[in-house]
Length: 327
Ligand code: NDP
Image 1 (cartoon, protein in one colour):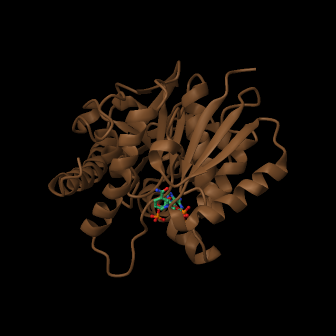
Image 2: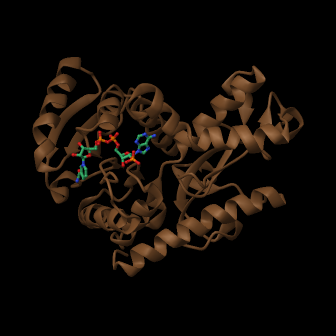
């Protein structure tokens, strides 16, 4: 049995939190041999709801769940944290401008970055799910100067999984036959799901897929899938978002399979022309518990233009939060 890991989840009483906590507690994220100490962070109004979830967690009697504690104070919630899942964020309200949204989230992710800086374990892993996820991760990282930047990430795994699923459905192949799919850029409508590096059943995806379908059906379907689910379900895609968060952390801890890669938004080292320091999605492998950007891919003109557009949006968001004094 491994040493216990402290996992802090923010926004724990929300929809994604409800879909996420039980899977963390059951061992889906860190494996059956790693006991989990759950710490739930909520705003004071939602603490009671978090207590209800904690009662249900207790009633599952998971062998891997060592403890559950609830906090409304980030400093306490992140004390000793090994895995931080930052899910709680300020939703865009009616009439709210983008600047207001960025500012409200700066007020959440700045202090949480400081709390992680103050109390986290030396090998902490941070995944930001709350939107705008890439820029929220940038804000948190900038408030944690003692934590290496490569410990801060944002989630594009759901976009990645959505892309795999669309390709599998289109080609009649199992998702396991699709490799080297990449999401580039921002977790937003400008994200670029890149099939040009992918293989399907061992064949290069561009040989299997029609370019018109890729451009006019596949890319918009992946980018707008969240809205389609809200329209169909009347509620947002909480379970698949929680699943992707589990996938992201599990891959980060346990590694990517040989011959394949995945997508994650990580702090750029300048690779592929993305300005250093931006939190951008890349093709990544995980080796010995660290993300590495897959190097040496040749990008065609179409891909380059799409990536550049998404990067331009990330630059705008960064400049906006910088102007607001949030970095
Ligand atoms: P959800 O649990 O549904 O969503 C939480 C965040 O995840 C939102 O920012 C949402 O973005 C984002 N997200 C990322 N990917 C997805 C996806 N595929 N589908 C849906 N959402 C996605 O929100 P709730 O409102 O149910 O719960 C939020 C909770 O956070 C509340 O309980 C609130 O009290 C809490 N909160 C806690 C804070 C803290 O701990 N300090 C601070 C702020 C809030 P989007 O808005 O774009 O859908």
